[in-house]
Image (cartoon, rainbow, N blue to C red):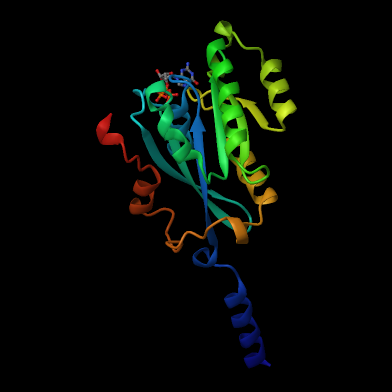
Length: 225
Ligand SMILES: Nc1nc2c(ncn2[C@@H]2O[C@H](COP(=O)(O)OP(=O)(O)OP(=O)(O)O)[C@@H](O)[C@H]2O)c(=O)[nH]1
């Protein structure tokens, strides 16, 4: 009957997932690596998809970026730590409890690759295996003429340690969003989100509202730059 059809249509509509019902899960991601390898530039790319010249990070900067997967939205909270040695002692506070860590080096600086290996060793002592997705990232891929670290060296190091690996360019944007998507999927696969990922409470957001867009690019240390 007409009434039954209407009722069935109503039920279908109410069971469909509206954007407001999608769960938003928080992911803490930290960026580690020597000063000048491009951590801040990558963080800007993740959250704004643009490249801007940056100055050294003071202590730590914080940005957010939403990644929509088929069944949930991941709210990446990106902690961009300063690579300068003088801040080294504060960083364990930042990477503790992170679901994702990017260890970044500059393909044109061998020293930064050596430093990345120290970061990896340090991370291994701190994180619970299986709970943190770690990616080794060779940045400044656009400067391959000045390359000091071969692609295979990064690949081999990552393979030996079971890490994700890619070469990116924060300048051209090459492989940056792919990297974030790979990490998002890996986090979704390797964790039971219900137990390890906290739900973001302010989840009924309109992604296109100016307020949300403003929040997405928030950088708490911007004034200090
Ligand atoms: N050519 C090229 N330059 C880059 C790239 N990424 C960053 N840079 C430049 O490298 C310099 C350092 O970049 P940052 O993003 O400030 O590096 P950082 O690792 O955050 O440095 P700290 O904040 O000191 O730890 C800046 O002049 C950037 O413009 C890239 O992919 N290609």
